[in-house]
Image 1 (cartoon, rainbow, N blue to C red):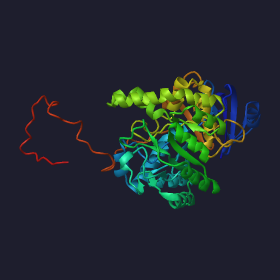
Image 2 (cartoon, rainbow, N blue to C red):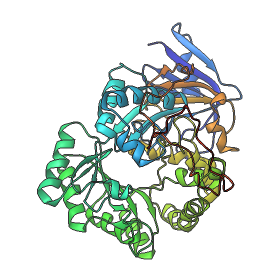
Image 3 (cartoon, rainbow, N blue to C red):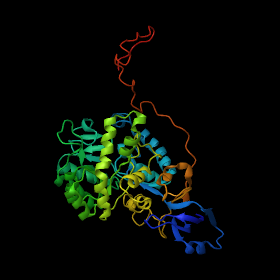
Length: 454
């Protein structure tokens, strides 16, 4: 592989340090020098490729710590659970992985996937069969029969969509071991879920502390970390006590929960992008105003606690929840950083650190990616713009001049527009057509048109 010198750019190294105007030398898959050492190392080399980054920003590739690469942007759990097919889902996921990479995202954590295809996609990318970002993949999320965020769509036992219901110690241990045997990088647990008519607000705890500890102990004995979908103070405390390695969402934290997080330094990944998109843009897609307000409040009510945890030294990671219709691939991977700046009060450099150096933990590659530092893997972006002044430039794909993954240039040519396979989406007759919508008059059907009941 030819060596590459990225010369005279504004370098954001991902560590939180102030930008420096300097060069970066890449040889093979790694960064070998920065600054004066890079210029000296490049001098006289005949095999050198030069990228003039004068006036441009050079920074680590973004890492999205919460990306559902196998979902293909469903607009409901019904669509996700009942309108996907195994082989086709894998083929579509490969195209979506390329789209994510072309947006400047050089690594993702995909902790749960339909049909467990995230593991196979990861292996195909690593083997050079299809292009895509680095992936740290889980298998099925673990549910109890109480369910998760899909409510009553989750069965009392067995597999549905991206999750598997487990009951009792034997099933818990057996499923964790099975997933690890098949190549899971993470074990994911839906610690909280929605229960219809439950008197408590929001999601409720669906695992006991002993069950969570059994998951963590079993996974840790085999060298695999555990990540939990968690909302609610009591569940956060249980996850810390159980030894969970990463907590997603972590909203509705109280003082005892904050104390537990600070004491353990358990990394947090709030994943606010989905909520922020609905709150800010939901009106444009006809979202229920009550739902928009609920998600706006989730951010507002939790931002202070999460900022306090961050200020106390708790690692703050970044994830976008990309993969749903409200968070399509390639569009919103930067958005969590915008929320961190706007709602948590982080500086742009602090927010970038969350999505680069800190997020290397989500990839299980700390000290290997997420930094423009000698010895690191050369996952690098060259951007026309200064994200320290305007973090949203990271979401403008027209500003991307170069994306390098392991020192190799990524082809940024957009894929041609695609359609949807038959039965891939939930069909709809449109909004409810009551007589009041039709002005009190029911139109007579066309005589030659048969009427079919749904």
